[in-house]
Amino acid sequence: MNLLEIKNLEPCIHRWENLIRHYPEWEGTPLDFLKLEHISVEDKQWLFLREEYVPKRELHLYACFCAESVLHIFEKEYPDDKRPREAIEAKRLWLDGKISDDALASASDSARASVLDLDSASDSARASVSDWDSDWDSARGRASASALASVRASVRASARTWALASALVSASASASASENQLVELKRILLKIY
Image 1 (cartoon, rainbow, N blue to C red):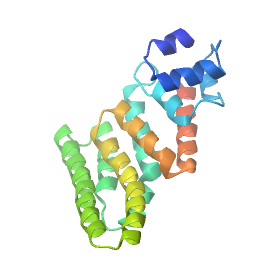
Image 2 (cartoon, rainbow, N blue to C red; image 1 turned 90 degrees about the horizontal axis):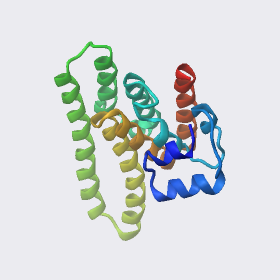
Image 3 (spheres, one colour; image 1 turned 135 degrees about the horizontal axis):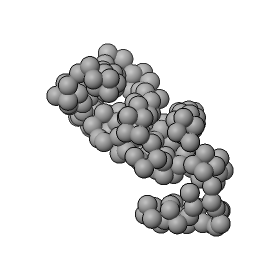
Image 4 (cartoon, rainbow, N blue to C red; image 1 turned 180 degrees about the vertical axis):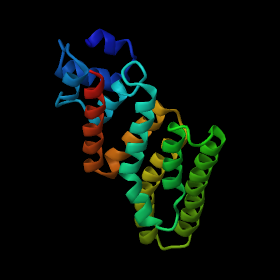
């Protein structure tokens, strides 16, 4: 792997400039790339979470792992709403051939509905509180919405988009989740390379 190969994947300008600023002559293996200090977890995921590097099944499993790594945020706030967890479980069952595409789509739609329900309730609540409370709720709501968006995206989208969305949210949700995701990505790449 080298810079030309990465450039051909069309990284965003920020990603590319960061890479060439810190590693202008870089060449190595995917595992070497994961060790680069000045490359974010999200950028490492952007590069490797594609079928050119990781088999499709592993991408789906990684997406489940990422969604699960931030699911606790949702469940802490909404302990009675099991739809996102059920959607992740449905994805795993689908990967094992135990449920149909339609059953997976139904679980996905249900998880998406839970997010839409909470967004609507959150909007109504914010409208009825004082300015200070509204600002506080809004900030907290954005953090929760980010975690919820991760779960929703993880269940609905293709494996690559799904994992990337989860990765982006994990950065704001928890540095620990982000580091755990990097460890899992290393484990997957070790099996391949």
